[in-house]
Image 1 (tube, rainbow, N blue to C red):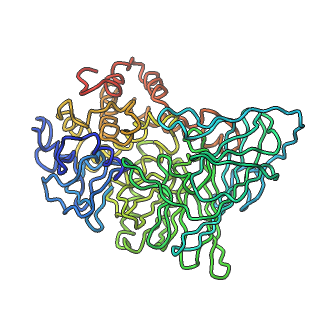
Image 2 (cartoon, rainbow, N blue to C red; image 1 turned 135 degrees about the vertical axis):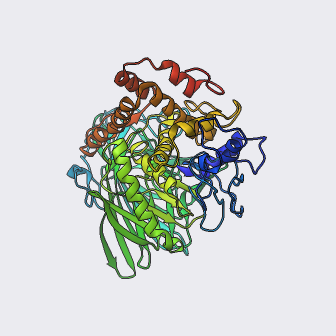
Length: 575
């Protein structure tokens, strides 16, 4: 993620700094190391016309004047904007810079809107079950996710009435496997009124409390049994709002809506098991007024017009964390091309039509380069969407990142596409390990600057290391940043510095082999989920797992290095 949320979190972290202070300004305030290139050319900043956004989510202050070379132009809190980006304009108009079918899915998992798919479960009145847990066990988001089952597939049929009312009538079919003798289970849902639920075709009772939608089937579901739940709702979904994260979830736009879920916004419009540990495949059938279009994750299918409405089909056949699900409804300029053999689909709101070709070109170039660095692209399609709400952040929604309220520069595109490997294919086991997503994506920016001959990763590292120990670049330690600082400076910058320190310790050859091996973990995980095989650890990344792989592939003991860069308070001194 890049942009507004990281900046918002950064504001909390940088209490005591003036509103005009930015990370770029912090860098400019200290003498450059002897090895660093002096002046703006050597300072990781934002590209001209780019609003300061750390790949993540920062808040942009509307109306901030465009920056001039060397000026501290953005509010604190945007790590990604600090790297290789001169002169960002924050809040200035146009300025923010931050399968086809269900091929591969078991036939039992593929269904149309409202289909009750799955194995009918028989039970006797003597069957005894226990409730699934309300929460999957994440310390930062204790209410997120649920226990007792593992989802294979979501089939979401949404009928959107139009921008005037914003009403949605939805039928969501969820195919899952029980992991215990299940008497009831929870879904995460903060959306409109639920009008009915069935489990294996039979009416189920339900209650709601906060984000918990508690479902009690008519009969106990035996352990290790596939079952299907159909949830119907009707009403107007709305966004989530958080002081540190900004606006997300189901967000109205000028001509429709866009869904942006990180970290817990998807339940505003879709009943899900909302945690990265339980990835699943998705099918979207979205009906809209015929003057609108729909863009979503995955591969587009047929679009069918019936009277004044058109239904668009999109299918994500690779396992996906719920926070990465997206739907954009509106008017778009849609372009199609390829990066090698990978279809690239970009969609741009008319307000940003002049940037449509640039987004397509940059996406293709970045994908080809990143595949050379990280290994084969992990999904069926790629692309990007520029939509109109002035959220001023970018989000790595799977296969099709969303740039919300701005035309991205190439650094933003590189960052969000890097997440397709790090965060999307290889996803988190716990939110506290968010540096594995943001540190890698930020380091991809540094590598891109090196690739383009604009800087080197070593010089960028030294510029940040010149910061004082109390700088938000170093605090809090990124290995366990606390929920309020998930998208703060240190998660991005110090996370990337950790990778640079690791590269220097083990050498380029071993480092890049390690990076590709880590990214490849997402391939086998997604294949297992696609085939309907349950695995508790598919694609679930942990810091401990990365350290173990690094030590195994390098043949070196790396405890001291990782302890210093991920967990030690303040500025690391020895590693």
